[in-house]
Length: 306
Image (cartoon, rainbow, N blue to C red):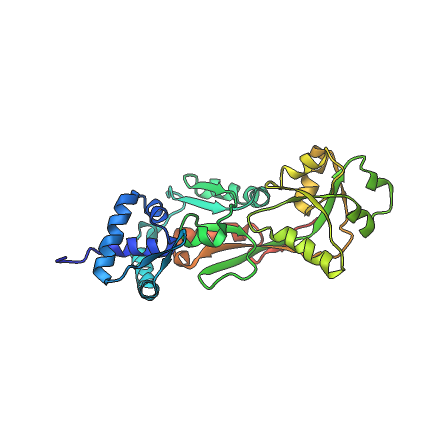
């Protein structure tokens, strides 16, 4: 090899970040054979396998991890300096953003953000992806999405965050539910099966169960839906109880034929933040969108009224 193709640095970053030849190819928009060829050239260049099979997964070698820690900051600095977005103008930009968020958070966040985006950046495109098993960290680290809206209990150092809002929880039952004609307390809450809505991490439901466990109690969950917005409408056909973020419960109660009840135990507020990978920290276009989303919640976050 007479000279080194610096494009291999981009391929190397994608391979080690994604830990998958096919996913790295998708991230860069090239075919799997082309990415396999790049991996072969990188292995020859560094004299190391770089990625090794560990069961059904690829795992970076120690040498690959050391190289990645050295090269990744240099690559990101080069990309920031040479990107056309260094002179970002929202009025003329046609940049596309992919946001990872549950339907609950799309429902709460986007109506606050879109009016400004349409007014100041009419050509910017937004795509929202629902949570899935791979999770937010993998989606951000692999550069499949640029932003994640949700909760991350202990984010790694590679993620940056901005607090958006917090809100309380409430219970929801169908109109005419037997619980509405009796005292509403912990015994009544636990008497019925529960209907949960869940994103990929199930953080909200975990908080409910932890609060119950602290009081030596446990509920029975009969069904878990992937959609917060659908939950009130499905709930209205059953005698189940749902514990939901207050904004969803209150907004959809009338349309779904459901009624709100206070949670019969103290529940911690649901805290929602905006997350992004550090590679975008100094990207002007990305920073502008983050500022738009943050400003929609008062800049320093707010507490949504129940």
